[in-house]
Length: 177
Image 1 (cartoon, one colour):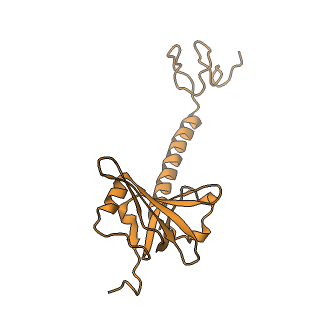
Image 2: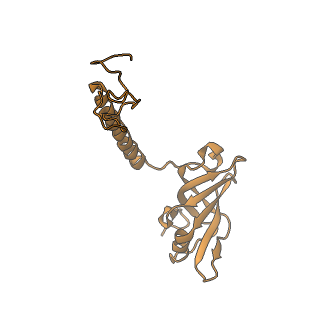
Image 3: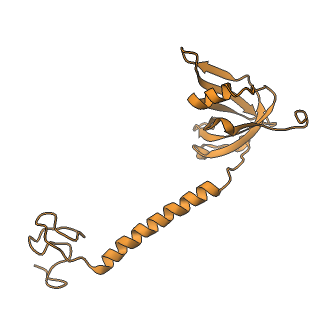
């Protein structure tokens, strides 16, 4: 037996001599085992560092403004990114209803001045809220949409709205009071 630290090998039970790694007591015979004090501090430090990292990640992700991106600048590495896009409603909104008449899906195309476009989609409750909001989506009017991108490998992009409030009309000289 290789004796270390008070006559026993670290990582092994002093009673049954089975490997117990860094446990404070043996899971086989319930005997108290030697655990270096630095290891306890390391465990506490790792837990504190992980908690601090998660807290900072949460703070930075909630306080950072959502970036506004041009439709022409979308590329596959932006898949699942939350972005804001602006453009003109190019197509009449497509509304799919269930057999009971509830709105299940709503989609339309936003186009910018360069001719690039992106499909904007809303599902279930978001689509229902957009359909029943009382403000119709008007073709040719400018809109700003915040949502999650879905970009395929060939560069085709779709924007999924997460809330009905994330689609807002743009105020232009033509629509200003």
